[in-house]
Image 1 (cartoon, rainbow, N blue to C red):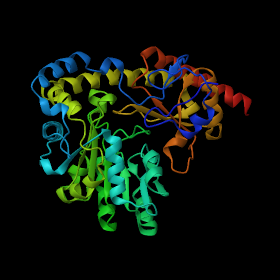
Image 2: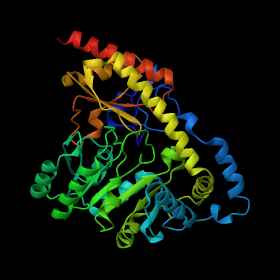
Image 3: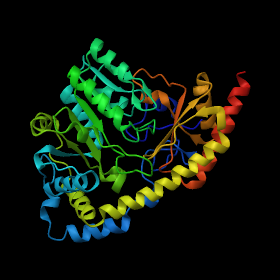
Image 4: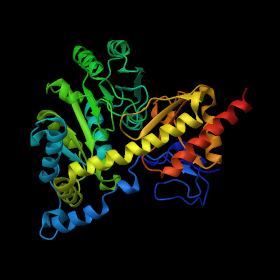
Length: 398
């Protein structure tokens, strides 16, 4: 049997148990004999700006000795200013240097912020299904998922959870959500903020996909809508713009909270080398690179959408994402989830069970499909095989 790898953070426990000795894996962590790898939430090869990064290195490094020395604990001031400029250009936000911490990818940002707010015995509230479940398990013994409807987290569910279980923080991915692909509407964002203010629950906004907007409405961030009250802390990343290997993320918060978070940063200073390259690249190519990424991923989104309509039809439901990397399929027969995934693996198609995105490992009868990395032919073939295996599972389990 082929193996499934949690390529976004680490090998999942399930994959470790199933791994066969001697299995050859690709650079993405997936078996080399696969038909379609729809697991991977990382950039497409053609989206990686290799030539421009070589140019950035030539321009940034010849006399930049600090790039090869230890760095500033809060991160390179050059890169801090790049984040500030990105927020100004794309969102109209004006923020100060002391509000930003550069991190070793958004993973470190998420871990640091959650550890600042939460101890092992406290509850973390998070979305109905969430990439953050991977981090919640490391930080706390208690996670509570909030049901979503078409507009975002249900306000009545938030109100009840906050009143009865008193979570230490609400972690949410409001824009092009991972794994669900959905986006919280502007009106619902305001309602969520009102509930959080009323109960005194801080919000941690993970916005890894904010720039990857393909069409439709992209509402203002929760941070912007909150107006600088200090309730919302926000995280972002360069992984989706420059490539996951750049390992650069950032935290935006109040100066006071930044001072509380910083002692948890034990890396001795995020790589000055990567920061110098990213700073040079973003100063020269930021807007054109993001526009190019939008074109690349919009096309991939549309290819997968057409394949879903052709091969899945009424076997599952899904929402057309306006940005990000993912489709979230909910099977009409949710009890067949594990059987469908195993059948796909045997057929050489790797898809992600919804179970990994829940702290209770409830799969919700859902499958996440990543359209960001696999070649176009794999997107089409993978969805075709998935549809075939769903039908086979239904026939075997009438």
